[in-house]
Image (cartoon, rainbow, N blue to C red; front, side, top):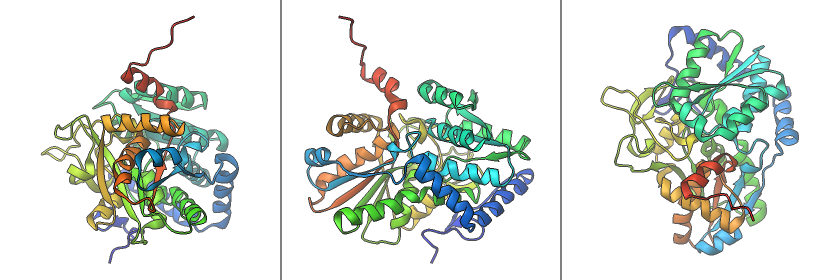
Length: 404
């Protein structure tokens, strides 16, 4: 039986994964794989990484019982894994510090990455600053406009931000652009992929760095409730925050898992959603075999999500495998449902969540009332919504108050 957790030696999770690369990228990606295989077994490397998580990021992040949300919905208790309280405001810092440390270990001088919502870019720029590395971030022009506060943060942290005008001008195009730069100059550059996607070893490496989320949550819920949860919920674009939460529970059959992807404006219209797990088919993207929204020629289809970090036409190969074997149920939330969930959490708990995380909240809103009040849900609150405030204000027609 294929492992739920570990890829095979060629980087496959069941039928998905691997490394499909042009010849000139085979060597630099193999170099990353070899360096990571060595570093993860090095106690000194892991001690330095864990010290940064504790003293710089502020881990462990709290597991918070959302009393008022639970009471309003009825049914299951809802706990929030508060990754929004991490330094830089999201789960992304967990793997950015790991990749930054690996880059430094390899003697690289520059970190290169793509970003959608901007949280990966901010986290990587932060890691570059504390580790003394250069940083370059590629971001789709649409996302640059939607996520302006994060663009400012990246630049303040010393990163060079490249606005990508090609293609759909969103996350997929930012990945393409960053890969192009890496192909031209990889001797001194480490490509720090921002999710559990791409060629082996990235899906496993990013998941390993993110698995601290679920490891903490597993300990915390047993301390608070004396048992494991009944369900886990996390949003899925590429899928790093979901794999971060799910990994520690994959072998616990009693724990149900939901991955929530964007049905956007209209799931029946190509280009109006990013429901890869629901409507995708087997394909190739960014050096991996995975599920993909694609046209008849196998080219990635245009996608949409109100959350910039989820507007990706593919998904991490481990997620595709977990769907294949039925271990995780993949569901959707629309833009409208996501905004309503965003507003609900603001009003009930005084927490402004990222729009990405609001997809997970939206599914909790649906499923909690169908469960007993003795049951438990953990939602990965993967990021905070500071970056989304201007966009939400415009969407909801919130105006500045008139002067007295």
